[in-house]
Structure formats: structure tokens, C-alpha cells
Amino acid sequence: MNQTPRVATATIIYESMFGNTRAVAAAIADGLRSATTVTVIPVKDAPESFPDVDLVLVGAPTHVHGLSRPASRTEAGTWVDDPERHLTLEPDAEGIGVREWLDACADAPARYAAFDTRADMTELFSGSAARSIEKRLQKLGAQQFCERKSFLVDKNSVLEPGQLELARDWGRTLATELQAPALR
Ligand SMILES: Cc1cc2nc3c(=O)[nH]c(=O)nc-3n(C[C@H](O)[C@H](O)[C@H](O)COP(=O)(O)O)c2cc1C
View 1 (cartoon, rainbow, N blue to C red):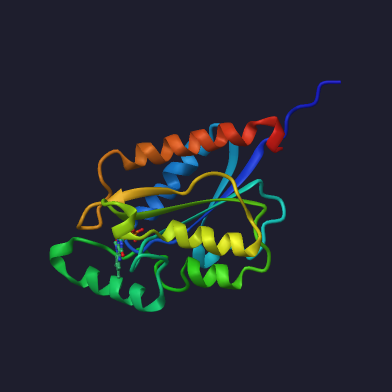
View 2: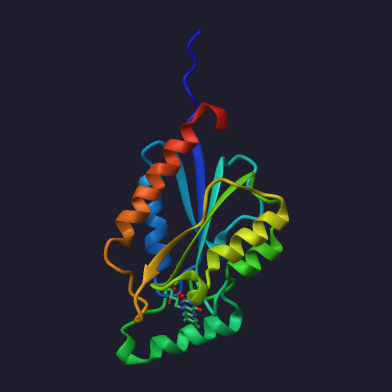
């Protein structure tokens, strides 16, 4: 008897102060939709468990080499007040970040992939929010689905050209891997 294959499900949780990580999350979701049912949720609305989700992607901006803290988010707010930076604050910027959300998570997702936005330089100097996300999720017992991915911004916190296309491509690759029978 032929069985229709179940469509894989993915949830993307993101934090964003200036909109870059949100735009990356949306582009990853576009790519994932080629073969996956995707939900995109700002971290302030994120659930604390994921019973029926095949893959949870978690993304955040890199602040002070890792995940944001209340003080770095306050600092980000002051960047917006500087007219020379041409930055606007996201409507969802108020409230918790990925660090606080992961600290409160009841259950780890079964499988995760981490991403971040960070400065366009070697990770050794920029640090990486995705690296901190991985450490925390591994501690919770979640299984890594693939290598973390960084999307790069310039010195004005504007995404470098081509980053959203890379994000879409990454989403498509993940969708293909999620369809692999051994993983379902
Ligand atoms: C307070 C603060 C600290 C930052 N520290 C770092 C850092 O250590 N390394 C880095 O690569 N980028 C750093 N950045 C730049 C952010 O990574 C960049 O603003 C972010 O990727 C933009 O994403 P968003 O628009 O989603 O907030 C910092 C930004 C702020 C506001």
C-alpha cells in the first residue's frame, strides 16, 4: 500500500534588535518551505517545548561575542538614537532574548540548527551568538542537525550583499536533508 510521506515541520525562533536576524529568519523560512511546513516566531512569543516539531532553528544577533543580555540590548537601543547609524528598533525588540528563553525552556527540541548575525570578520574576533546557542541546546540534551551558520553584517549593522540569498539556500538545503527517510 502506498503511503503519502508526512511533510516535515520546522520552527524558527529568532531574536532581532535592528531587523537583520528577522530578515535572515524569513529568508531561511522561504527556503525551508520548498519541502517543509515552517513557523517563524519572535523569541518573546516562543514556546518552551516543541513536542511535534522535526527541526527547531534558533537565531540571534551576536552581542559582545555571544548572546545578548539585558545590558547589551539597552546599548543597542542607544545605537538607534544615533542618527548617523540609520538604525530602527524592531517592534519585538523589547523583552527577553534567546539567552533568557533558553534558560527557561522546559524541554529541549529533538533536533536543532543554530544561526546568528555577526560582524564580517573571522569568528575568533567577532564571537558568535550561534555558538552560545549550540552550547546551551547541547546542555539541554538536544541533538545538532547541522553546523551552525552565520550571516554577516557590515560595521553599520547592515546585512552584507547576498546574505539573504545564502539564507534561502541554507533553508532549501535543510529542507532536503529533512526529507531524507532515515531522519523521519
Ligand atoms: C551592544 C552590541 C554589541 C555587539 N557586539 C558584537 C560582537 O561582539 N560581535 C559582532 O560580530 N557583532 C556585534 N554587534 C553587532 C551585531 O551583531 C549586529 O548589530 C547584529 O548582527 C544585527 O542583527 P539584528 O539587526 O538582528 O539586531 C553588536 C551589536 C550591539 C548592539
